[in-house]
Length: 238
Image (tube, rainbow, N blue to C red):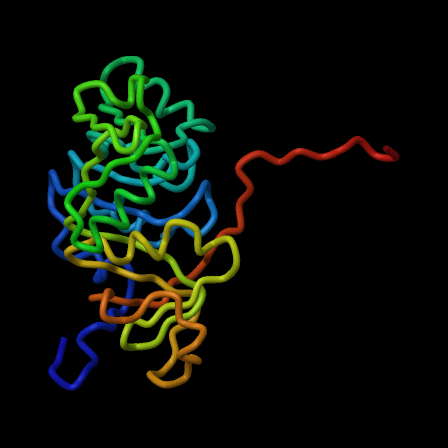
């Protein structure tokens, strides 16, 4: 990019993911198909990068979200909380093609937040006495047992916001905020895609969910799809 241009603003997803290499750890925002970095995932698929470790609440569905990277076998390991709705994930896990680390949802959010806050590990009561705690240090505080969980940091973090300015300040819309604010803090390089990119100063400071200091790259995405993971409807007349 020329010196005259804002160094944070990238033209598209392809440019935004530049530098992603085989074997890296990616942290991705979103919950189900809500608030996922759609354009970045498509660009990762098209790049052919492989052996990725992907940290995300879930693995998308068979034909969208991280399911696209599973279909092309670009993911080596998933660290997730919920892994339903994805037959490709199931097949690869059962055939031992895919390494999986299941993590309670609140613990996963806190591990990502801790990574962004510079906290190397923390104790939580969640998972004590279960498979989640196997091989991990435990300690008693005030008569209650806790398990030590390590923070998560990524080589790259990918988030999707409703609005962003050219410094990288982000605003999320309603439930699409979900994991995105924590994820944005936990990448060595955080890439934000936004539905609307505005000039610096146009966003109300009191409405900003993620300060631009956490964001190294930002681009305006396009062709966003409002998909529903599982559509349930009542029969007519009921």
